Length: 108
Image (cartoon, rainbow, N blue to C red; front, side, top):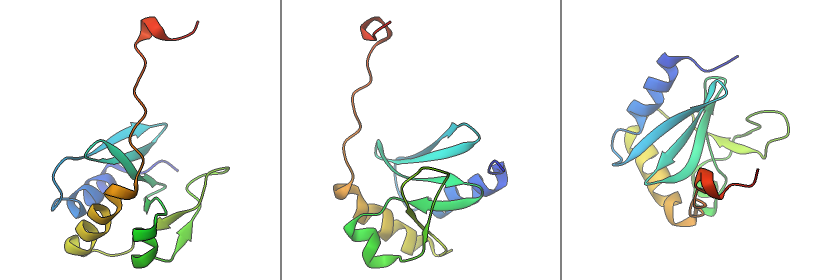
């Protein structure tokens, strides 16, 4: 079941204390970005974040976002300050995004 627009709006409101957050729709679900880095996603109306040392210190409920995916932590708090501390603390532990190739550089 794809996530609803209402749930995406709700999660984005939880992220409102952070600057430069965004979501990108992918195959009916949403990838979440903070300052250009992927930190989590919305899958079947579940707010999930990557497992990092910082997120492990604040969360413990693991979920599988979709078949074949690595486990992630489910965010069940409605406290915007908790969510801000969680995501902000994860930032330095997240990998830098890979540079995107230009269409002319892609293999055919």
